Image (cartoon, rainbow over all chains, first blue to last red; front, side, top):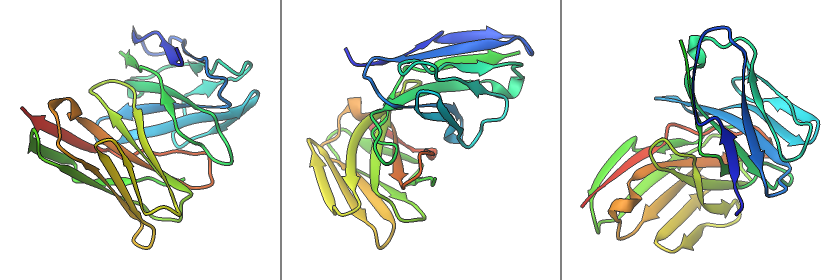
Length: 114
Length: 110
C-alpha cells in the first residue's frame, strides 16, 4: 500500500531534549516536506527536499533541522525543543516535476513540549 | 510561494444540500489543488485543476478556476455527513514552497 508513515504519532517531551520525528514513503517520490499545523494559522511548511541531499527552508524553519540521505526517508530533528514548537506535524511527499505536485500526507505527529 | 485564502471559514449545512467554498490567491499559478482534512488527520488530495482549465469534475466534486479573478471554488453536491471536514486550497506556482491557509470547516448535519 502506497503510504507516508511517521513515527512517533504522539510525543510529550521537555524543553531542550533533542528529538527526531521520522518520515518514510514507499512511492519512490522525489519531493518530501514537513509542515506544522497550529490553530488559526493553517499548515506552514518547515523544510522541503527536492531529492536526495537537496533540502531547503520553507516558511518556518527556525528551530528545526532535516536531512535527506535516502530517497524514502526525511527525518525532522528538533535539537533543542521549546514550548512554541508544540504543534501537529505532518510529513508529505510528491512525485515532483517542475513544481511541487499532488501531496501525499502522513498521519501526523502530535508533539507537546513542556 | 503563495497562500490560498479559503472562504468562508466555517460552513454548516444539512445533509443533501450543496456546499460551496471559495479560494483566492495573489499571483499567477500553474495549477490549484484542493485537499480535505478530517479532524487531526493528514490532508487528502481531492482534485487538481490546471491553469488552462476552467472547470473540473470528480464524482460529487466540481471545481472551477477563474485565473482573471485569481479565484477558485469547490462545490460538493448532495453532501453527506461523511463530508464533514476542513477543506484547503493550494495554489501552485513554480516554486517548491507550499503554504496552506486555515481552510474552510464544513459541518454536514444529518
